[in-house]
Length: 114
Image (cartoon, rainbow, N blue to C red; front, top):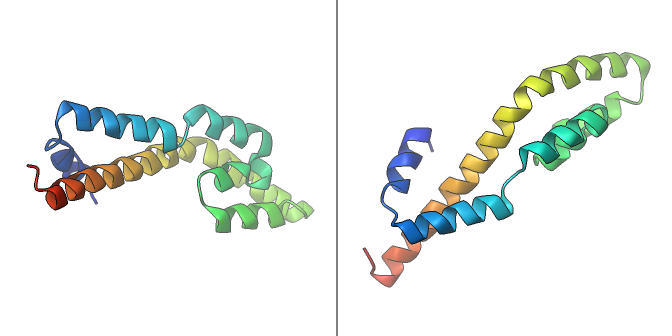
């Protein structure tokens, strides 16, 4: 779902439903500080990627870190992730937000509320 279609759907919610969406994202969403702490301390081992539900690339980073040549590759990857991680967190939280909005709108349709 695109960013704009998510905004359009979100515009159909009342204040109470918007609070429910915000609360769900806060509870189940990814935390920017946690993501960057994991990146800083465990990033060479893919810790931040496990947190962001990217297990395949996390395992690749972990395995690459076991060799000298792999460690050099992972170092470059680690630096790139410093700039990409913010977007990963935003995308993951936006995806969660859109899912919650869809759930609310679907429950409205099944209960007959409009």
